[in-house]
Length: 88
Image (cartoon, rainbow, N blue to C red):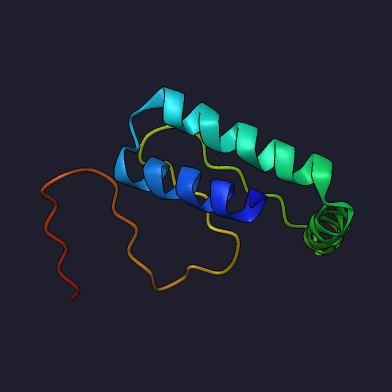
């Protein structure tokens, strides 16, 4: 039941990404899922530990933020509207 609630909240957030009430709902559902599921808590902690031990902490905050978690050499990263990118 909780998994379905988290999934529905996430789908609503994708459909309406600017709706702060829906974003808060996703946060609440995830927090409840973590409170109720010890296995999920342990898996999240394990995954975060793996990233930290690899020396990787990535945070993207704000509209059109970019926070690559690995090598992006040779990549083109575009944020914004109506951009035209040409490779030479």
